[in-house]
Picture 1: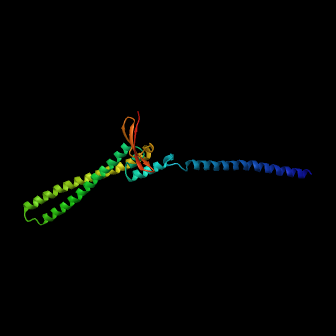
Picture 2 (picture 1 turned 90 degrees about the horizontal axis):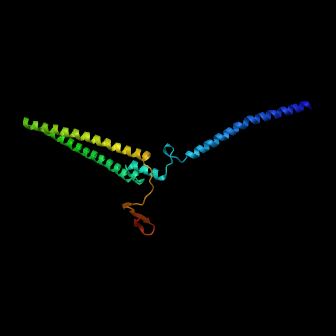
Length: 205
């Protein structure tokens, strides 16, 4: 009887020890799973650098990548958006004009070389050589101008993307065509499901 009692007590003691050892491990494992799930849920809908991005933020970023300044205008920063757009377009236009001049100068140099090779007297050859030298100088200036404005175009584009990602907050959607015409007065074009659009003039006294 004593032997049975001792063996049963011994088995009970072993079960108690196993239970106390496995329970904390199970508790820690469940806590770890719960923590992981919570962290995953809290960061699932967060955007760049952990900040929440709305649909308007995503749309504005895509717009700025395609057309510099358009994303800023979409978020309500009209002046800044116009500056990026005009600056980028102006630099790209100057680079294009310089490239067009480069093509023209190269064609002119080719023509002068052909005339120089068939020149029959020294005076004519010297005149053609002087024209080639001056055209080459203009060509070099056009190349430098084109490279400069190309770099400025890329700089405007990069600055535009950095600005829309980090420094342009969403001012909220405003009615299309909103214009402040004076103190407490505004004019806007508001969509109307029945009539298409309505011009709304608001005067506050």
